[in-house]
Amino acid sequence: MNMISPKQAVLIVASMNVVLFILYANTIKQLFEFWSESYAYSHGVLLFPIALGVYFYELYKKPKFNSVYLNIYTIVSFLGLIFIWFVADTLNIQVVEFFSFFLLLLLINFVLTSASVKQVQHLWPLLLIVFALPLWDFFPEILRTIETPIAVWGLKLSFIDTFQDGFYIYVPAGTFLVETSCSGFNQFLVSVPLAVLYLYSRNLKILANYKFIAVMLLLAMVFNTLRIYIIVVSGQITHMRTHLLEDHEYLAWLIYGIGIFLYFLYTDRKLARQGKLNSSSILSSDNITSVPTLSIIDIRKSLLVLIIILMIGTLLTALYSNFKNKIPLNTPALMNDLHWKEVSIRQGFIPDFVKGNTVFNSALSNISGQSVVLYINYFSEQEQGREAINGLNQLVDKKKGKVVHQTQHTINLSEQFSFKVNESIVQLNSGQKYITWQWYFTNALHTGDAVEARYNNVKAVLKNTPQISNVVVSKRLLMNKEQTREILKLFMSDNFGVLTRHLGGG
Image 1 (cartoon, one colour):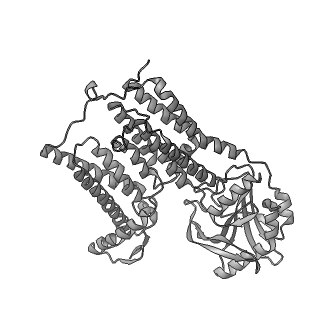
Image 2 (cartoon, helix red, strand yellow):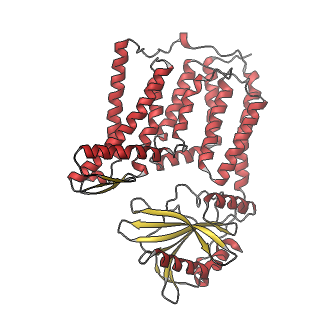
Image 3 (spheres, rainbow, N blue to C red):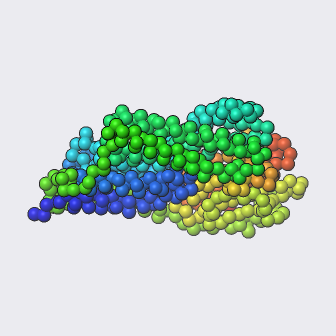
């Protein structure tokens, strides 16, 4: 009977992780797309492979393999997480999809490598991945609330006339806004896994580890406050002509990197003086532990059951995605039926959306000369609405302008019917301002709520009518807001039925 060697145990665990990644490859792809597009969580691109690498290095030093925890309780846990993953994937709620996949990754490695619930210390590298998931979006507001007044206090100590109003900092040379992206959230969040990985080769007591992490978090806030201070001082000295005002992300990482390097250097020297710094352990046969005495035959059934369980989520998604058809948007017929007629090809503001099967984009005017711009991003063959209702969709490209105000606005088209749209005021770099109404249309329903739109889309797909639209009506803001809203509302009143019919409402 072929018995499992320590190296074979590590290979089996690694192979089962590869199976998980293959079966849930779409989630992995979305994770890396999310990390590459998100400044705040971009560290995930490196943290994910590093955490996996450290985990398997730990297993290689001390091989573990045990399948006794593949029991009724863990099977139910697997099925529960897979169901949550499937629902989140179907509704395109990425934060839930990512987190359920993360828990699946932890659970499969717990089942394969843990002989006891208490013996799970080897899983700590995988736990670091949680700091790359979009679960921490409440921190930026806290950080800039703390850092802004401290930066203002430093400016006043520098004899610069400074006034603070919320997150606005006023100095003689101009006005600065400490935005969410300026909170130093990225550096603050990455400090925990960075500290833990640094402590990996240090044999310190638990209390000392916690102190080290706390100091890292404090330093992250101090360094970002210093960045805010430097930017404002530079703007004051150069009369707002410094290039730091255009791009200061590099400055954040430069200050943080130098500061943390010096802190690590100081800690190493301090530990060396105290005689507490241990050299890294050398991989040898002495520290390779044996695995439970099992044969390939003993574990074959367990691994097969585990693979079948993991396949359930992928199979459900594959079956669900077969509910699709091709119903094109007939733009000439839509243009002909609209009560407002095209006056010019759209110029200026264009939503920064993932492009659908059809994009309708035209300026329309009524007989009174009032005009709006109608933009329709239409998907006819999409499977789960993730293209139309996508967290990466932005109303305006940050390089071209910004959203200065955003809220939900209720459109009352009659006494019996009203629906909500996402109203935004967009300001382009040219100085032009637009009021935009954005909403989704699927399953013959209009809604400005993304979660409701996803739910409607699930029902539409099950009916084999999966077309979905991301619609924006905009008007340049040349008068007061109420007058502009009235023109937008007039357009909706005149053309609501036509839009509903052509976008898939029957």
